[in-house]
Image (cartoon, rainbow, N blue to C red; front, side, top):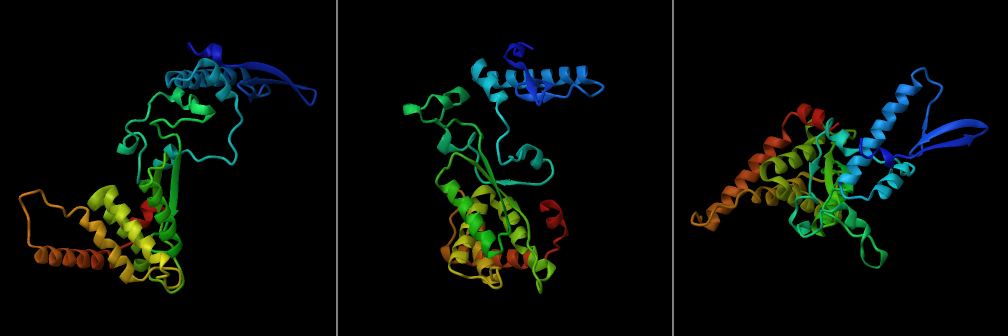
Length: 272
């Protein structure tokens, strides 16, 4: 590939034994297919260099980046995680309105004023929160995720829903938080889910928790603002406020009762 000159091949001495490094990665010269393995590794590094250069990085910068040691602590590749579990994304730097005016050239990240870095319209940073929305701790953590979205933090934010279990808690009750959050997301998208998470966080902050889990009243109240996100009618189709409020109340109650008594098998398989 054209980027091959930007891959750095060096020889070094390690404990009196020869070592061959490619962009800082040691090549195993003792394996039977050492030559073929080295070629495969070289092609992989050259391809990675070409992709970085295509994003706008200078060849020298791409070479230095490939030669850097892996970050510590180890990072999770969310692209691989998405193939196994369903992450509900609450924000997206590449498409959301607050970041629309940001540059898309990746190289501009190194050209900030006064030596400071500059953000670009790419999902370079991702935060995934594993939460049980029905638990006090999970509701507070989900509320923090929602707050990051409100402040337009330059991070792609997502939640991975997982129901907690505790002694004396029935299976349907244990999975209620997962079902509520998933129902809100399917009914009204991001806005509905964010409304649900903010309401649950507010209840948890007031100490409304029984044995670490939020009471049914708090969960039912949180569902109301979430369902309101999908209840807006187009102009010209106004309804009387009293009738609208009654319909909304019945809708929330019916949805909550259905979700509270629902089967958790499907929910659990999707989020574990």
